[in-house]
Length: 324
Image (cartoon, rainbow, N blue to C red; front, side):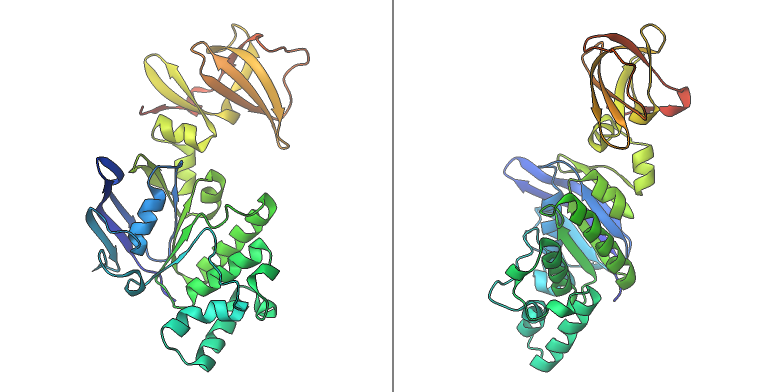
C-alpha cells in the first residue's frame, strides 16, 4: 500500500457566525503519521470529518495526491475512517466484520474471506476470526476495526480518538501496534487526539489547533522543545509561562530550580507536592497568582508548608520568548 499526499487549502467550515474550521492550510506528506492535537472544541474532529467527506466545507479544498476530492462521496476518496466507538457489527463474526467493505463492493465470498484473513493476520487476530465483537477486549476490537478500515487499501487512514476508551496500559500497547502497522504499510495516517503524550509518541507531524485554526505544527521534538505561543506551552503541559520585563517567556518545568526566598529570579510561594513516580511535582503560585510547577527528582526540603515564600530560578539558555 502507498500513502497519499494530503493537502488542505483554505479549508473552512462555519455554523452560522461560528467558524469551526477557519481557513486552514495543511500539507501532510505521503506515508506520514499526522496527529491533530488540541482541546475540545478546537476544530480537530470537524477537520477530520471534512477530510473524510462526512461534512461539506463552507469553502476551501481537500486534495489527495493532487486530486480535488472536496465534494466527492467518502467512498470515492481513497480514505477510510475508524471511529472512536469502532462500530463493529455485533451479530457478525470478526472475519465477516473485516470483510464487510468488500462485500459492499461486490467482491466474491472466497476472495473477500482470503483478504480478510490476511488483514487479521497482520493485526495478529486470526485465531479470533469466528468470535463476535463482545467476546473481545477493547484492544482486540481496536485491531479488528483497523483491519476492516485497511482492507480497501486506502491512501489515507483517518482515526478519531481511537485509543480514548482504553485503559492506560492497553493504550500504550495499542499505540505501539498502530505505529508499527502504519510504518510497515506506508499509509498516511491522520489521527485526532487530545492527548499530548499520544501525539508525541505516534506522530511524524504534530498539528496543534485552537479555535478552528492551526496554532503550531512541526515534528514532535521541535514543538515540545520550542512552543511558539503561550497557548501551546500551557497546552503541552510541560512548560511554565512567566511574565518578565513586559514579555512572556517559557521555561520547561524540569528546568526550573527551587531556591530559598530572595535567591532566585522569581518570587513565589509554595502550595503543594505531588509524587508522580519518576519525579516530584512541586506546585507554586507566582506574585500574580499564576500557576507554576517545578519537577524535581527529590522532594523539597522537609518542613516546607503551604504559603512559605521561595524563589524560582533558571538558566538563561533555558528560557525562550513566547507569543501571547
